[in-house]
Length: 293
Image 1 (cartoon, rainbow, N blue to C red):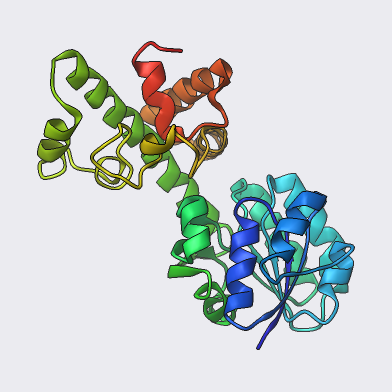
Image 2: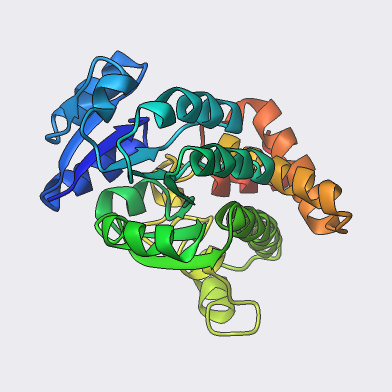
């Protein structure tokens, strides 16, 4: 049994922490939002009054926070209090520069550290089927892997400090652009008189196939578990997709990369969010392409 402090018990953090409890780890959590703490407590997470209290005696600290500034603030407060040899894992999706600064902070204090953002959304967090994209040295990855495997089905070491964040934003830039193209195809198919099912049957077995079609189809019917069948209740909100696309563009600018499709995807999701759809699933962008927003 490992003693784990989990900081950030939101839509992703709470089910992730719950899976650590299910795996038999002593898990203490903290969140600034009382309702988030209350929800996590129902899953067996012991709720601390502060991040510092959650940290007491912890072998592993996991943070799941909104942005780089929050991660750096939390690590600056908690890392000096961490036990000797403790492992710090950040599963937030943040900019690569902030991630590297967090690693540097941990290194100065002699602590192991890993950036380990996730893919799989709320459903994957609840089911324990997330993919973790990890950045950090081999020792940190080896120490973290058994913990992460309690929350996900795939744990990939992508390289050194910040490499997990780099992989995450590349993946989500591709996902955002692919979802837009998928939605365009289904919106066009509707106007051409094709049924959703017939187009799905062709695309899902042909050269246009993608995860956005076969696992997350943006129209109701073909993939029953997709958010399109539940009024686009989010598995991954449009506001979060826009956040990741912006991070990808910031990264592209920082290294002089050319990403025209990623840039256009960011613009379209910005329009979608501006139309009041930030809380809807990111596949709901089909409504923008249908001209219904």
